[in-house]
Image (cartoon, rainbow, N blue to C red; front, side, top):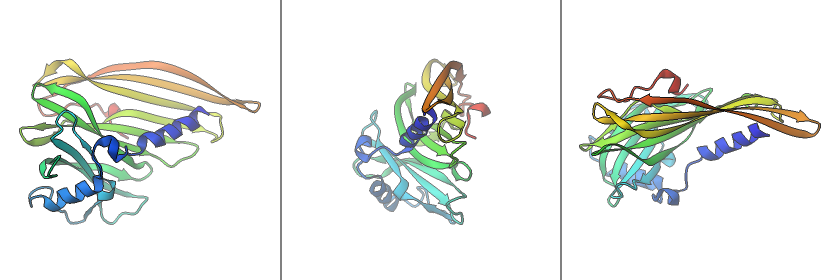
Amino acid sequence: MRIALSLLLAAVCGAALPAHAQDCHDARAAAEEAYVGRADHVLPDRSGYSRDTAASVCRRWPARPELTLLATPVWRDGGDNDSRDGDVEIMVIDSDTLAPRAWTVLPGALDIDAIFFDGMQLDTARYQLAPGTLAFGLRVQRRNGSGPNPFSEEQLQLLALQAGTLRVLGAPIVVRRFQAEWDTRCAGESTEVSRTVAVGPQARNGLADLVLRERRVSTRSWMDGEDCHDQDTPVEGERRVLRYDGRQYTVPAALQPL
């Protein structure tokens, strides 16, 4: 029962937020207008790649409401629905005119294979890394299609607007991972790991530390007659500190996506 509920919650969490919740009423229209009106040097079209503006997400930046954040998948041509890869283009645009103010590309951020892309959202929590540096995040969800061996994860990648330039602050961090082995009815075992990311009080090389706190829950499910029972074993995981090295935050391989 618990495994089935976790799979349902993973699907709900992976769904894009409705446009009104993001205060960006039509992400596709915003993306198409921003791309049509951009200058030639702003995210130029690339041979062999196609933008999927229908899957774009956008959100007005609460800390800077004059700006709106926009993310668009860009898939490499030639793949199929079962195996392909691509990038994500990020733009910071004027909330009124939709003119691009800053932009960057997250190369290789998307892939579809045994584990595939399942949606993305923009994270506008207040990541105040320095007096003049406020970051935001892109959360990408991935999962597999296995019934008896389900897997899903969510990763967070931070970016900051500094002196008119949009900078990627490090590799993506896995903030949630769920995996299980069960009989698709009740009996089985699962593990769910969740991590929170907070801005720490100390700073290194100009930007504050990132403090990660982990919680791990192992669940065993079994049938007793006609009833399905669950037993959770929660464990408070490690506390980790990611430090800025002057160029990016160093993210250990154990915290990066599979």
